Image (cartoon, rainbow, N blue to C red; front, top):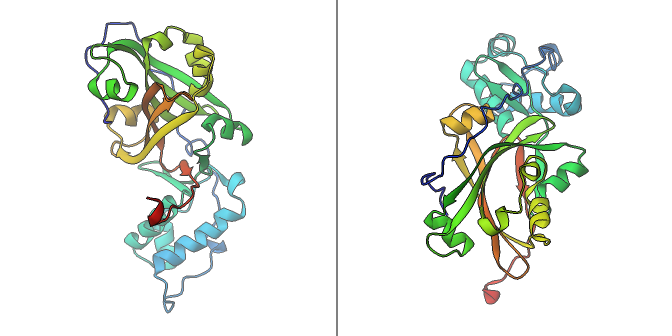
Length: 285
């Protein structure tokens, strides 16, 4: 299923642009550590200099990760002068740290220690995991409209041609910080039982249980990397083109009836999926 064009919508008043909190890493100016604490690089070592630098920074961050979140790292120029290395070497090291989810970078803002990635076991509800980690999940509704279901949505929800669905667009916030973007499609016979208050407060599983008296029991999920377009980048407060994790999903009842489909896009550096499954042999295929 590809993201359908948003056409054929009925004109419905929509809320104004949300007032969103500033991105993480911009509030404090404290240094995570000073370069005098970093062991010198070894030019005779087999490991490239960028990898040595990344490993040394990673070790220091790991010593006090939670307390260092939002604090800044030494600048590229400071690293170049202290270690006698080139700017590309420093940038390679920072890219390595960013790929590990240890730092976050922003043009004109600097480099900061990033919060720990939130693991998501696909067998559990995201909100249940967040609650167990003592995180607060909240939602901000951007739009709700009734539309003629696009072909991909008709197929996913097993609806007849011309059927209507409710399109719901929300931001997902983690401890008050924008964390993800939701685009959901619900058949109108289900959506009529979903109130504005429910959308503002409840995750999908809870919302569907309240609307139908039964929670979904199965989910088909596809996870891919997609670049942030201009609108999504603005909503998530990231640079256009930043890679995002996108989950495409269809929720089903125990009977197999589909009740919701859609997409959720997450900050790739703040989120990771975990799945465990039995490996089938060739004879079982």
